[in-house]
Image: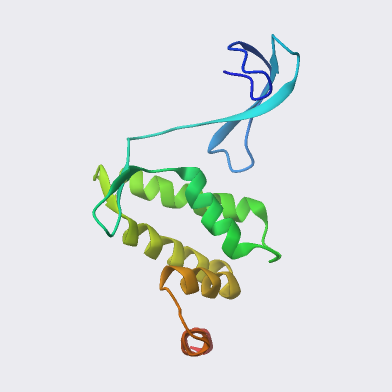
Length: 153
């Protein structure tokens, strides 16, 4: 594993343990070049996924990109980070076991929307505002009104 500080090619594993949700192995490493310590996570990858963007472009699936978009929607909300990690892991697992090597970006967006709906209504509305490209305050009002109606049952 390359050191993020000095770029040295070799590091030594000092400690390994499962992550909070058990979906990854957390490893503490020490660089053999500069002696800096850093953490890595090792995850199971069932298949290579390609995301088909709406304009026809293809790009590799990036878990970190999914995590970033959910982190933005949940920023400053009192949500346990383990629940967010489980949401991301669940979406990734569904995509990898779905039988398709290519997945449309709108399908990932819908999966995130569904997950956030059950996690936090404010995060759900925040994500929807970007995903559905809200352009006016009225768009927020209509969507939030729909969310309130669904919550009331």
